[in-house]
Amino acid sequence: MHTPIPVEYQDLVTNPIVASLATSMADGTPQVTPVWFSYAHGLFYVNAAVGRLKDINIRRTSYVALCIIDPANAYRYVAVRGPVIDISDADVGRTHINELSFRYFGRPVYRSDDPNEVRARYTIRPDHISTMG
Image (cartoon, rainbow, N blue to C red):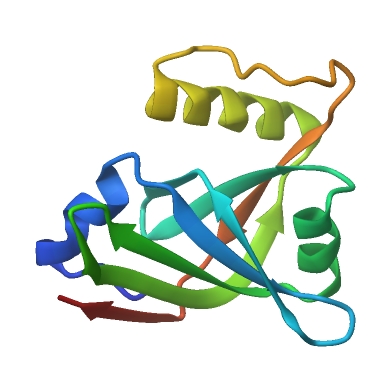
């Protein structure tokens, strides 16, 4: 069972806002990265290139945090903590990054500098949600 997003904060998960994703480094210190995300059926989805720091950190320690801040009011946000419960294969990862490209920029195909880049989609189950503002 997932924790629902309160109705008055739904706009923060349905609008294309860049979120901050926190993962854990090998030494336990936090690493935070801006990310595109999607939200459906109570789950959050983020995407990364396989082999990059986010990917390595998530595969080692699957518990993450995501913070989505209202661009019009920095003190209004949704903060999520939970485990990554699924890491997709390359086909799902590529489809997802294309969906995110369309969501954020209206481009149906994500453009990468590396044509051999392999993408993964990470499914986050929000075990804890806090809101402010």
